[in-house]
Length: 427
Image 1: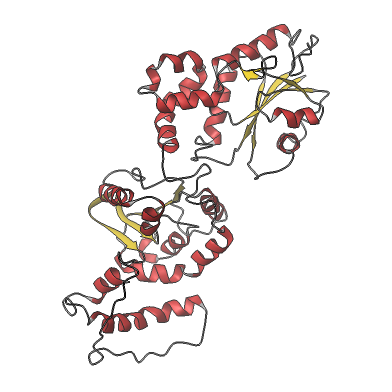
Image 2: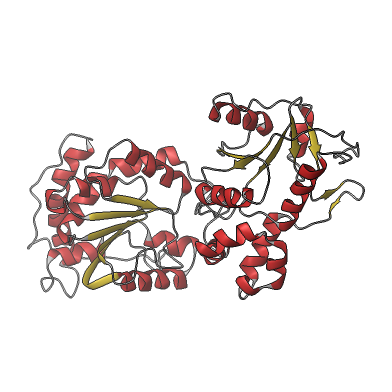
């Protein structure tokens, strides 16, 4: 008989160990299921952990990556007398029967070794997910759930995660130490997970699944990012300093892809930072597909607003595009200032932050009359009859420079600054 334990498994508790150890030692004899029915004595052959949302990390619902959750379970298994297997179950959105999907995934991942059925498997689950397994005829043991009172009689693992987040010093918190199994404590302490999880869960900007907004159409968004990538890179490339190059808000990695193809940056290290889980996944897929000419390309899912995302005094170039306005739109002015301060700390002396963004006036409803001197500026370049973005990228800057040169004559400082300064200041 197998014991199947589905869950996110960010940590394992002391209660879970004692519960499993009791089941193993007593061979399930007399153990009541969620209906109160006592079980007959039978041999347990193995324990199977189904780690759900295995493809998520760095989000409020799933702050810890699958590989660390697996390490916690492996360390935990050293205290048990039976074989323990771990299978990752990806999040696939809302589906009607996640239990069936989990069982199918385990069978596929194990190449048929673990074909779980109600006849050979008992499920351990205290959350409402148990109802899905009951519908398929599985016997379910309640663990932390008290069937008599209809309430939990033990803290759930996520309850302890919350205790860690709010503890002053979680490593010395008596309640955390009492409830958390030593295997979990070892991995959390070794990889400093308490600090990382606290930072993610207290982030005021990012949503539960790692996004700024839940309403963005990512298919449209990705297509638009790729379409203007050539123009973005052409405008910013002259200011890139070789060395360590970071792209914060890298979307699907298009700007980094072009930097990798730039001969003068061939030996540079490129780091893409993206807070959106959807876009981060696409970056990883592109890397796996071999789309980046430079092998030294690394992606991370992080929020650059509330903390450093690169080591202090380490970056030669940091690039951001169409990002700073979102920070103030979804956050506030303090968030924007903190973001700017963090970039200053990350740059080496003499390093450069290239920020490409739109400008919005404070009094956007005020009518402004602008006089342009039409005597000292000219634009003889005709617009090409094409919508191809690569061709427009070659044509656009020359036309734009002429246009801005004419436009800037209406400002007091016109003629005193290079045209690139006007492009950066007024675009």
